[in-house]
Image 1 (cartoon, rainbow, N blue to C red):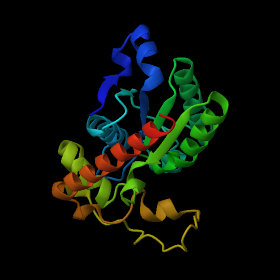
Image 2: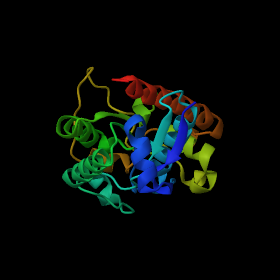
Image 3: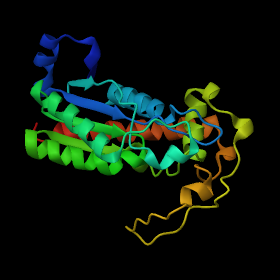
Length: 239
């Protein structure tokens, strides 16, 4: 098992000693509306817990450095619903770039950006690619839901996971099916943005009323296992 050390609990000398052989894990989420039934911390909570648990069960590298969660993301598409504190996409990408540059200057050679918000995904991919090119980092990223085919925003997947983690953050009496109906079927590999679609959905997807803590526990376990495997994969590159 890897030894997990929290970046913010270490001194500069301790980080300098550990960084070259460690994997830095940076969890990123968002602070945004999640329908009428979920707390705005949902993505940050999921990113934090999955990162902590995956780091604890990963078999390599010897040391994982766990950075504090970045709790703000690119959430402008949720602003019309209220309850959202967002960074613009360009700003979010610059924040990630600065953090990864800082990590490289501290001696880090491998980093994994573990993302729990779909709106962050494109910027995360660009940031890790640029960090590799500019700073020589071995850098990976993944959207947690995509690792286990957990789709949707504030739907049955996320609602179930939060029920398993912190049921006090779920208002199940307000959880109803999204008024926008099921997700559109797309040709494989095709992404389509539709004006007004989020408003049709009332800012959340699918059927959160069907969420259960039992499903959330299994989904969470699957996310942790997949994230741990991703950490190990990046740790093995160039080792």
